[in-house]
Image (cartoon, rainbow, N blue to C red; front, side, top):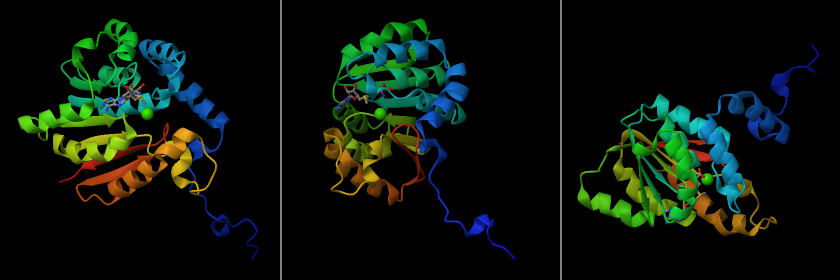
Length: 242
Ligand code: SAM
Ligand code: CA
């Protein structure tokens, strides 16, 4: 029997199809994301890409994923840490029910105000409680208050990367059992799998170790089950189980 065409003997690659080529990424955007992208998200995305720090925006396929997740989970109470101009915030707010709420934290109000007119026009500003300032003290205050323990259905973390572990220590108390915390950028431009001495851009080098540590910590935390998705720059979903 010839084994020439027996696929079971070929080396198996588990590399996600999503990451193979730029063309494939473009195909996904053009086939499955842009045709149904709400006009307000498109407007905010285009406005944001023109800004000097436009690359920080949550990419459109990830915004679509967050929207789907929020709907599938029937999220009512959400939190976002790291708003920028509000692209992921708007995607989440649109997906929340009319009486849903999202607490949005960012040290910078100016960027949020660039996106705010679009958010208002979309009719979801009433769901958003934006607070300017570092997120950790706000979270600590919520923990001290006591009444927020186990109240949040979904938390999206996309801010100061070196504090992700500090956020995790606290957010695990605020998210409800069965709720989800999503940590963004956990593949950090692919640097997490690069050899330590590989040439890489300064910002990748700077936080590579932070994500290596975070990914290890999340993987062994018995209070959560995780799923790390190669969407955008990588998002790790942590579902609280105890
Ligand atoms: N989620 C946003 C989007 O969809 O466009 C992108 C967020 S951007 C990558 C990171 C944001 O985190 C910036 O707007 C920055 O001002 C904010 N940030 C940085 N340090 C922070 C802190 N300690 N607390 C709250 N926000 C912070
Ligand atoms: Ca991000």
